[in-house]
Image (cartoon, rainbow over all chains, first blue to last red; front, side):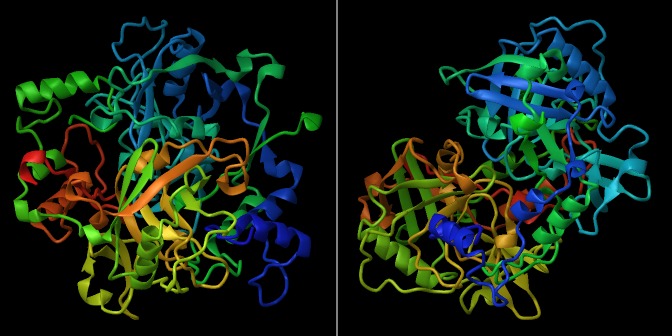
Length: 304
Length: 304
């Protein structure tokens, strides 16, 4: 693609495809794009998320696919799966859409019975063992001494205490809580705005949206304090939530996620740090954690 | 408010108001909130944006109020005002809504005639004189050696070259361009996602949304490449654009913006850097430029 903020975008893109070179390039060779890198990725650069750690949030408008992080927040993930399997969320609704912040779904009155085994947990940072799996990036950060990826999720790390935690980037999914640090997973939210990184280490993140985040981010904003919907604002019902592995294969959304430890992902990072397209006049040479693309693709029907 | 990501939020907020103290506070004194600070701001801490540098983008769903930055991007602002006054944008439509990125409006075919005097300009950084008006913050940044505010807009600065530029935070408004660095202002966009700071110094920013950004950010995403709407996707028409000063006073949106050089704004920044509410378990002690709230209020009818 010629540039990010384009004027004659569609025309230029068509030309680029036709000519095979970039209008702004001095060398005559078209700079490599993220699309190019993904098109030439090896099959093993992609992973299929574990269906037993994948949630489907079904809205009337479509399906939001969420990948859970069972090794990062094991107690919350166990709680959420038990809640989903007991149909706790089915028939509830989106209760809050705060612009540039979060979408939240829950039982606002806490009338629903919890399945047995749901306990409170304080998983504000990752469970033991995370430090060994942390993939560090060279890029600086304002909210963590070190940033990188943990099990495919954007994460921060304190090298002194060896503490690792997930980062509140766009599309990350967490669970609300009251003033005590514990939560049970009944109040779920997704980030739909500029990364509220001050929430890192303050609230348990449990996963991220892999597909369909726009079904949440394009919802009408609530007019109440902090974006809560106030009657008669339209209710956005949760048709159902499922653990993907509980559905027959044919009803699952076949996704693949680019491995953050793959050579292709490293090439994507390099491309994004050093934009070589002629459109770019200034190049920062590095990238902020929450600006890193995390490629996800629907697997063509012929290959799954 | 008790906390950002709340479980019993509305109940807790009501209690807080009733008890006048914060459930999580150990000292018994309720920590000061941004609402408290704004409620006690002096009248002179607020400013009324110049109606001659304020645009109204009228959609069927309501009005988006945009404050222009005439001292930062004088040529683009002059162009845009001339375009608006010639009704260039009236009857056009939103052409692109890319999730977590931008909303763009333009004449996709460039069929419309331009009023006389519209020239191309390369205002990728602020016009001369900006350095003297830059208000520096102590907070670090990944995309600029120094960050702060310029004429009330979030900005970056290079202290060596004394270059200053506006930053691509949520709600900022810019103008698209082709590969050459010049643009004329006919292609406008607003940021509706995580700050794409790699665009700083690459494309001219001309202002920011003061009110109604949610009318843009909640639009359905386009299904085309880079979020362009593709038929038969619903067209979101631009009913009209106006310069506020061209409308009678009674038809203007009476807004006030907190001055970034006011003591109240400094107190807001301090509150956001150091969250003292009991809900917060970890405190970063600083804030990222694009996470800083820029308070705007509708002036009550009795005071304007």
